[in-house]
Amino acid sequence: MANFANAFLFVVALISPFLVAIFVADKRWKKVGATIFVAYLVTYIGLSLAGRYAIANHGGNDWTREWCPKGLVYDYISPAGRSKTDFTLAGAAFWPCILIDHLLWHRTKQARV
Image (cartoon, rainbow, N blue to C red):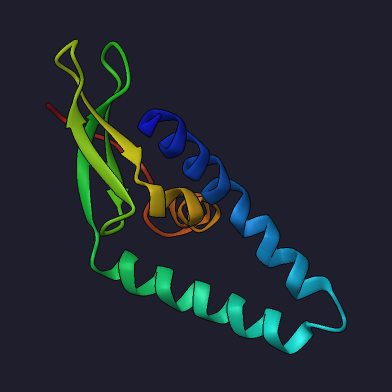
């Protein structure tokens, strides 16, 4: 039952940025939506500034340096012995910010291992 609850919460966290977007777009809730959106961005910026690069391998010789915002992405060793990264539950709620951050600021780079 705990696995179902974790999977359900993860899916809800993935959908939550879209729910925030609905509040931002709704004219009746524009101020509330804008406040939520600004708080969402400020929270991500703080967690990103506290982050670090981690070396990950997602298969073969694909060794990369990936940005891991504090508490949103974690690194681990897979059963195959490769170091990988994955979202935490909170990270699932911030996946749009993480994606944009990886594209614009903290780019994923090839690692020399």
